[in-house]
Length: 220
Image (cartoon, rainbow, N blue to C red; front, side, top):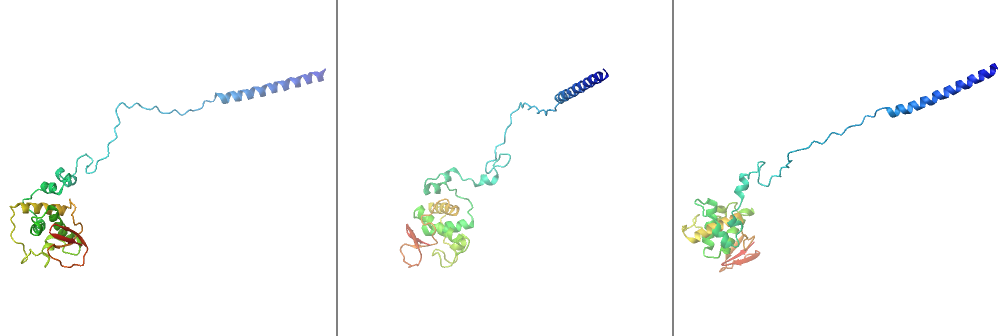
C-alpha cells in the first residue's frame, strides 16, 4: 500500500513539473510578443505656401544684377554697320570724327592719294595693304610708319603728304574706308596682299599675284 502511495505521489509530481514547464514556455513567447518595438517616425513634409523661384543664369555681358557692363555696351556695333548689305552702305554708316587720330590720318591720306576717284573696293584694297603691313612684322608696326617708310609711296615727298582737300567727298570716303580697313569690317577684294603697283607699270616682281582692282595690281 505504501509503495502505491509513493508511486502515485511521484506521478503527481511529474505532472506538476510538466505543467509548470509548459506554462513557462508559453509565457516566454507571449512576453516576446508583448515587448514594444520602437518604430522610427518619418518627419512630416511641411507645406510651402510661397513659390520657389530659381534664379536665371546671367547672360554674357551682364553682371549679377542683370545690368550690361560698360565694355559689352561699348563694343556693340550700331545696327546700320552690322546689317550693311554693301560696302557703299557701310561707308555711308561711318561717322566722320571731328578729330581723326594721327594713325587714321596717315591711313586715310594714303587711300586719298593712291586711290581717290576709284571704286570703294579699290580704295579698301589699298587701305588693307597698309593695315596688313603694319600687322605683318615685316614692316613698321604703325600706319604712319608704313606710309612714311622711305621709297614706298610716291606721293610722300620730303617726309610729308601734299595738302588734302578735307572738305571734299573724296576725303570723306577715304576716312570712311580707313575706318573700315582698320576695323576689318569688310573683306578686301585683294585679301592678304602686302604689295601693289599701278597697272600702267610692270616692275616684274617675283611675287604671287592676287588680283587687279581698278588701276592697281596686288601681290603677296
